[in-house]
Amino acid sequence: MVAASVIAIVLGCSLAVNRSEAQALYYRSIPIGERAMGLGGAYTGIANDPSSTYYNPAGIVTGGRFQLMGSLSSLVFTRRTVENAFESENLHADFTSTGTTTLPSFIGTVVKFGKKRFGDHQFAVAYSTFEVAREGFGEGLTQIEDPASLDLRMTQHYRDRWYGVSFAAQVLKDLALGLSGFLADQSGSYREDIGIASGGTLEATGQRVGGDSITSSTGISSGGYLLVFRLGALYRINPRWQLGFMFQPPGAPLKQDGNVFRRVNTIVSGTEPTYFLFDEDDLSTNQPIPFELRTGFEFKINATTVLSADAAVTGPIRDRDLFDRPEELQDLPGGLGIYFANSTARRWTPNLSIGTEHMFGKAVVAGGLFTNISSAPNVPETTTEYTPDQVNMFGASVSIGVDTKGYRFTLGATGYFGRGDALSFSLDRDAQVSGYVRTKSNVSALVLYIAGAVSVASKGAKDVQESYKDRKARKQNGEPGTETGGEDEKDADDPSDTDTDTDTDTDTDTDAGTDADTDADADADTATDAPPEGSPAGPQ
Figure 1 (cartoon, rainbow, N blue to C red):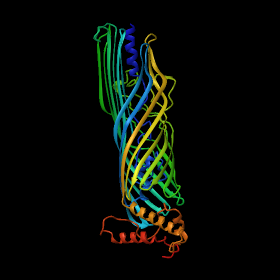
Figure 2: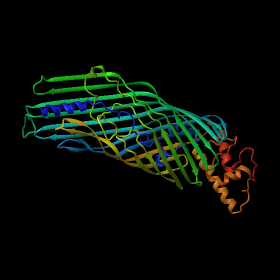
Figure 3: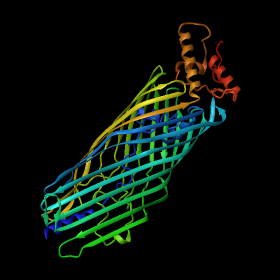
Figure 4: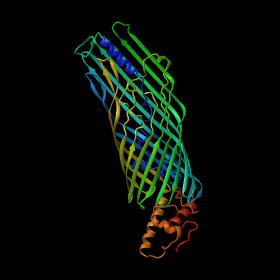
C-alpha cells in the first residue's frame, strides 16, 4: 500500500544515521570585550583590558592596577533560511528562523600586585566569564491534502559559556606572559515532532477518519564540562609596534553526558498498532573543543590613532559519534532525527580581522572587519546522512565611546552575513525513496551592545600623556626647560607611550591616605615628567 510506504519512508528517515550540530560551528559569533568589539575582534596584539583573559592573557598586566568591565549584547535581529529544506511531490518548503535574545556576553576584573619593576606592578590576576558561542534554530511546516497530511516541528539550541581565572607577569620590560584557565560549560538540545496521516477520509475540519498514521517525538539534550587553557605573550617591539600571540590546546573533558527521549506511535492497516517509548539519562557523549592559535599586532599611527589586525586558525576535530547509540535503539533503522546530526567532525577553520580606533578628545570611535568561517565539513551533493550547514560569514563592527580618565562607556553594533550550502530533505512518494540533496542557506544578524569599563591606573596614564603633549608644545614654541635627551626624548616623540621604566611609583591609587607615597610619587612624576632611570636628565 502506497500510504503505508510513505509512512515507512519518513519514519525511516527520521531515524536515519546523521551528523551532529550539538557543538559549535562558529568561533566568532559573539563579540567579547569592550574595545575588542569595536575593532572587529582584532585584539590579540593590544590586549590591555579584562577581555585579555580571552584574547591574550599576557595583556592583563599591561593595563591599570584595578580594572572592571562588563558588557551586554542584544541579538536584535538574526535570520537563518534554508532554501527548499523539505521537498516532496506537492510541497516545497523553506525553513526560516528569526529571533531576538539578550546575552550577558562579558564580565571581568583585573588586579595587579607584587614588586614594582619597569615602572609598574609586575604581576596581575583576573577573573572573567563570557559566552563564546550561542546558536539556535526553530522551524515548522504543515501540509494538509487528501492523499496525506504532514506536520513537522523542530528546534535546536547550543550554548558554550566559560568561567575562568588568569595570571600574567611582566618578565621583561618589553615582554609579558600570561595563562588563563577556564571551565567551559556546554549545553545543547534538539527537539523534533512529526505527525503523518494518509488514506481514509479527510473532512473539511481537517480531521482524517480511518487510514494510517504515525506520530513521532524526539528530545535530545547534551551537556558537558571541559577545562580550557589559553597561553599568551605580548611583546613591545618599539613605542609604535606591539605583537601578541595566544595558543589554546584542545579542551580536557571533565564530565560529558546527555539524554535521549524517543516516542513513536503507529497505526497501519493490516498490522497491530504499536507504541514505542525510550527515555534514558546519563548517556555518554563527546563534545570536544579544538586547539586554537591566534596572532596579532598593534600599530600606533600617532598618539590618537591605532591600527590592529588578527589572524587565527582553529584545529580540526575527528569524526566520532556525539552520542553512543543506546542498546535499546540498536535494532531501529538509523539514528535520531531528520535534522539532527550525530558526528563531532569539524574542519580546519581560519579567520581574519582588522580594526582601527581614533580618539576625538574624550570621544573614541572604532571600526572593524572580520570573518566567521564555518567549521562544518563540506556538504555533499546527495546523501542519506544529515550534515550541518556550511555557511561562511563576513561582518563589520562600529562603536562610539566616551573615555574620561579611567572610565569608559561604549555603544556599538556588529553585523554579519553569509551564504553557503545546506541539506534539503527530499521525499519521493512514487519511487518510495527519501534522502538529502544539497541546497543553499543564508544567515544574517545584527548585534547591538553596551559596555562599560573602569581602570584606576588609566587616570595616571592620561596625565602622563597630557604632560608629554604640553612639553612637546612648549618645545616647539622654543620655551626654556623643555630640552631632554636620551630615551626621554624618544618618548616625547610618541605621546602614546606611557611606559617610563622608573623605580618611582606611577600608580594613581584613589584611596587617599592608604598609599601616600604612591600618590606623592605619581604626582611628582606627572609634574616633573622624570626621565627613565639611567637616561640623562634634562633641565628643570
